[in-house]
Amino acid sequence: MSTTYVSTIDAKEEFSELINRVSHNKERILLTRRGKEVAAIVPLEDFQYLQESQNKLDLDEAVEALQEARSQGTMTLEDLKAEIG
Image (cartoon, rainbow, N blue to C red):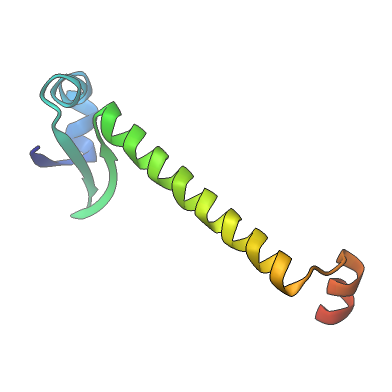
């Protein structure tokens, strides 16, 4: 998969073409402003993979937190407020 850099000014003028390139050619477009990367246009499959990866990370963190709570116990909100001050 190729990656192309396009300024936001050019992207504004070529938006439909960029969408076609991404959807049909599976191209990744990095948008730049003043030479810095600011956003990306990616194929839907890339986005879905990113979402699935994030969901897996979130689930792993939740399982880890649950295991920690079971092994170390929990604290009430009032106790936490008192501890924090």
